[in-house]
Length: 488
Ligand code: NAD
Image (tube, rainbow, N blue to C red; front, side, top):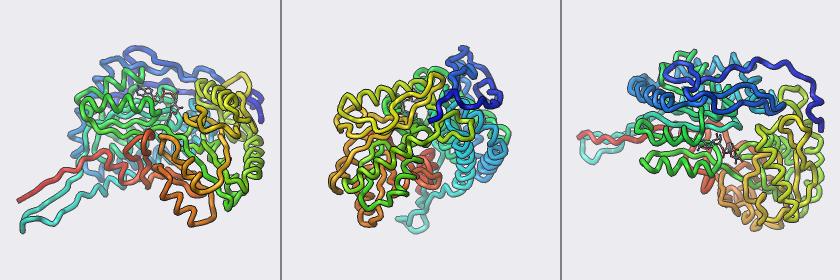
């Protein structure tokens, strides 16, 4: 491992002062500053993030309400054209936005670049999907009458997005909501404001009417309570931890508002004796270290069948220990810093608790250096199922690995937890792939793959991982209600 600060100093772009975007105007926080944005690679303060006061929030709500009628009546073609222009601007600006993202979030520059590209793709995809918000005509009970289903936008949306994918997760909410004809007040993460601001800037420059999208920042619990309880808001969408999701769901329930909740997971990976080991190891290294493991679908609980267990552990741990961990802007970094100091502490406690419960460190296990938030890619073997690390989402570069004997045990282990977001299987046997696809309780199943979230497909969890979907036609319909018209 190359330890930061051995990395060469990089030229950093100037990090812009984060501002709120309310009724088409940029403005500071009425209550001053909510928090500092830090560069996870150095710990250096990049900026202060605004703190909304009640007036800011009420103005954002009024803007979302005031612009809704005209926006819902704007044709899907025109709404889509604005989204497409914004996508083109994001593509043009990708190198700049990607550098800001790496500065504020810590991921490597290629990861940030890909994320901006996927955000632009999300805008394009929903620009087109908005044209296909088809209703239906139902065969009538009486000749000459019409029985029609008309999808209609729900109204102004309150949206909350986290820091791990600071452009893509906001894009997955903004694009379908706007394509459906909804307006939005979004609170992106206070820790990574520049990426979401870049999306809003692209939309403004693309001609989005004032008030259709508003960004506010502040104290998350105060902002969310104020927005969700407002009579203006007709839909709530949140991506983040299960604990916070439960709080927001109960706030929404006070006034019977529909919610989409994309929450946590603790994804099992079941590697069968017949797996292609070379491919499985390469895929697991890439999948586990993507975004330094800070992904809700990150593979976390690995179970390897007895016949290949030793071989797989040896190859996987060797590959993990050979990775270059360093500043996200450095061209040779394969894994960047964790996004904040809380994650480093969480990884240290996780390793400590796993070892105390009988787990063994195969590789890694430590923080790297004293500057920034770097942690070694880590593998822990033999941590018992009852230990906390096997039950609580790690959200970091840690592999918990154990063995299994047969398919029945693989299914039991895969379904052990109250989460149900993603589950993965490595096998060359199609019968095993079919059985596991049927039996695993998760919203997304990857077979020889960790790619379970594509813009054209629905993505959403079961059980404690949330409800509702983003992505695909389902992601558009999440912002629409189905109006039934009987025309006699
Ligand atoms: P956290 O649980 O406090 O926050 C998670 C996210 O929710 C953050 O973006 C935060 O700004 C936001 N948030 C917190 N309280 C809120 C509130 N009352 N109203 C609205 N938004 C609120 O903790 P954290 O340290 O930021 O992250 C810790 C855990 O959160 C991780 O271990 C992971 O399990 C989970 N997480 C999940 C995702 C995901 O993609 N599903 C993303 C980020 C964090």
